[in-house]
Length: 244
Image (cartoon, rainbow, N blue to C red; front, side, top):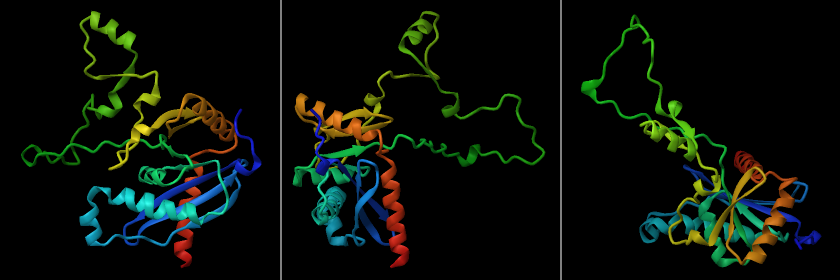
């Protein structure tokens, strides 16, 4: 059965914010099952020096976010939680140093904006204000791309129509998700699942434990939006910096 202990009906939300002029700042917010705050901590800005950048190379970010910031925040906390959730992939590096499961929350609500292709100087055409608009303007490819099923795609092929301007739709959205790469961390240890209206990556465990974890998270998702607390943390850190 799912864990229903009142002492563990709490979730921890941990994120790291990169402020270019100050450095990395971590925030840790603990909520009860109703989504109310019980405890909050944030770190002082952490900015690596040049020697650290050279020695750690591409492993510097997971070292700072996971071992230095996340580990410090979790040790400082006095309230036990059921799980820790983060929207910062590098924080997952802390999993090697703690037993508490750390989940990754995908931010799927953001729209991807594709950069415009560079324009060659010799092909650049200056238009005056008197130019007429074309009757059939060329819209960006992102607006004309259509999603179709595999069945429809096969039917179109029988008529000699290739899917050059079509994109196959996927019935399994989880398969399209990937945790951002974290140098030095094996991301295969996390499984991507959909809980409510959010996608999460949870530590890979045996089937029995996996089922219990899913049941726990599903129950808590009825009262807590797993992405919203990270906005609270960011705003709280910004307010703390203004007051400092």
